[in-house]
Image: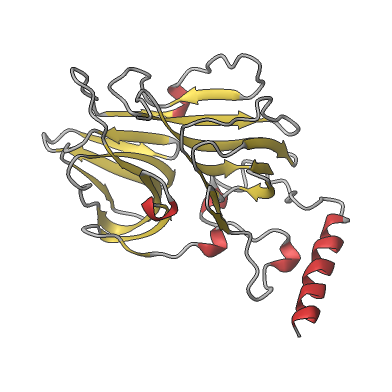
Length: 294
């Protein structure tokens, strides 16, 4: 029985690879048909002819990296949040020193606070949320907008309609005489930065000053573009592919990836990305910065 199952799986992959669109390709969508980042919350398993195959998933967990594809997300109530379900994608159990999770806010939902000395970053993927400080200052964040909350900064995240956000939290690594400030902003207001030796487009969502111990990057690749540097470094990464598809190398493995996939990269794991398909690839990338690894 096992041999028949494996033969069916291999046969399905082979047939799909010969199709006109290829393994990583998906039908192109016009921008008027679907909202931005819709595949994060309405993704389909690729190859399409394997989406109903029992037990099939592209998710992988290894010592120095993990790929979590949407069909593997497990949602449950988030502690101290109201009318909200969450799916933890990265946590210290994998080996990281931060957590990354998706939060699905329902009608009349409200967030809880992070643990003591823990900072929080949120990015809106669907719908809109209202963030409010303890002083009563409120901001409405729509898709592609984000907010950063320093450790022990009282705030709330609320929504009166369904919304989805991705959340990063980590215990703040203090540095004498440097204090991070709360902020709200949007991706389109951030300038494109120079990337010597590379051709992708880069935006940094947080200030680069020493007060901040991590940053969040938005990286855009046109089809056929790829990283020139095969990176190996001490920084950890948490990645959410927002748009497009491609191939990600992690260690000695090469993975087809598409919008909705999340990746954890441990320190010093070899990493590389190449964009495929007919539309741009965009991913959101956590990176710890401005602190000694000691």
